Length: 315
Length: 253
Image (tube, rainbow over all chains, first blue to last red; front, top):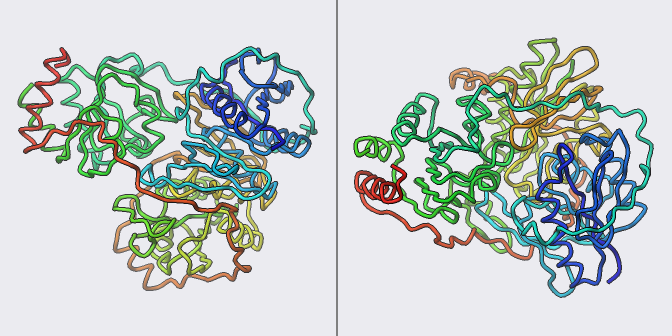
């Protein structure tokens, strides 16, 4: 089967994100089965882009692509796909890829699969496995037609398989980048006035199960008793019960503490991405089907408030 | 400033999600408003309060139960609510976005909010698709929006607490991750009063395209619980004892 796999890579501050290498590695595996070539696509400005194990790396080098801009990136990717007719376009299901994959799907009239955790070839056709409904269901779907767009959850494939030394071919933007309606203004860095949760040895982390802001004190007491820092999953942060610096997960921090005690966290893929490599994970949840129990070393199905109070008496 | 909020009614992930054939058993699940929609409604109302204008909420009514979500949006400060009745719980994101785009084209809009994502966005999210259908720019993962004149300034979140500020010429579509302030509370009495006095306007839609997402469902199954976690059983006190013993044995307590 002829055609290429396009991997739309991502970078921040000149460094390519792990998911870029994960996608290239997975693409190579699929390409060898389907008789295709892997093209790593880099959009940026003045980057060192020779680190992929792709068959080819295309580097669209333009100062207007130096920072992620969904409109500029969208224009370039759409033009490249129209010009080169790949069979498969891979994005990360990330802050950047999420702006582009579904948009491109409608622009091109081609199917898109999001939340992708696995990709395989069945009877010569691509099958994507997606982790939907907060990670509770796995959907296996086959995209119809001659081009599919997939958006992959970070942390699904090994990074090493995508690392290599293919010399990047620098090209000019294949489309005009004039008249953009979205302009990058400035980067926003995390404020340095709170604790850096990525360097803590012990974290007590709360999720939706904590119920309300008034209940945080109990979790904070347990964190103090254990010499740990209190962190949270996204619903707690979006409710502004804790500052964003305490968020663990895809849009928060990636942590690997010696202890991660998860209280009332179900384990949506976005959260697991940020904590699944912790040395010891203990999960407390009242839902026995909570995906977090697939990643925790120890778990218990009990009321978290009763448990925390009992732990406080014992420590 | 005419602000539109496109919401999505989705199966609740709080309960069991039974499978029937190759898809969710839609008859056995409750539908709820996507949690991120509360954030986009709040963001829209905050902008209305800051610069004036109207907020119109619109959604696809999949099972004839969207009114509750729309009443809630009105109770939180939206001015108008519209629905497009589908009577099919399995309508994919592509079809929903197409219908929403048709509806929004008939409205004069400066700013369109959607949620950043929904847990059932198998074929992608409504926001970027809506932008593509409407030929407007899209930016998602947004955690604050300010409007001045014909420009919206937004903060987009990347990983690790890093973000970036962008300026958008209006009209634009924005996928909200979190509003500038936490969503406000609407008292049940207010929602009830609205339910008794407001009639939700219904919009027509074009013919449904069969499998508009272009995905063939091969299989759907619950996440296989690999049972990696060793489960502690007993009363909370007994579980607490086991956990504390474990932590002490590892020098962690």
